[in-house]
Amino acid sequence: MQRMTLSMVQVIMYDVEVPLSARVALRRACCTTSPAIREAWLEVAASSLVREARLDRADALELVGLDEVDDTQPEYADVEVVRRNEDAPASRWL
Image 1 (cartoon, rainbow, N blue to C red):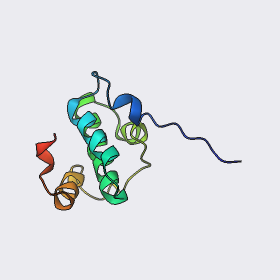
Image 2: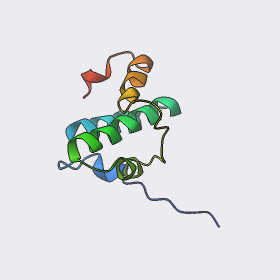
Image 3: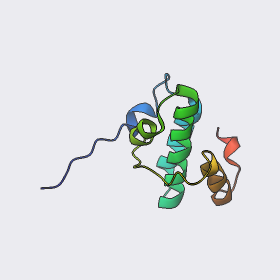
């Protein structure tokens, strides 16, 4: 039997109570075809939820559909990954 999953991304992506930076990062994640860039944007969204909505990091990661990520990197290292992989700086969308 295949396990069913529930993604809240489509719901929170348009909810006005979700911080704008998280919504924008989620939209960018949904618009890319590269799995690495998609994961980077989802990490940016989770970091925004932690920082602005004061969510626990594990809860934020689960909310955007990610399992635990490697916490050996600094908390905002994911933003630099996105900047190196996109044509324009991430700050343009955040």
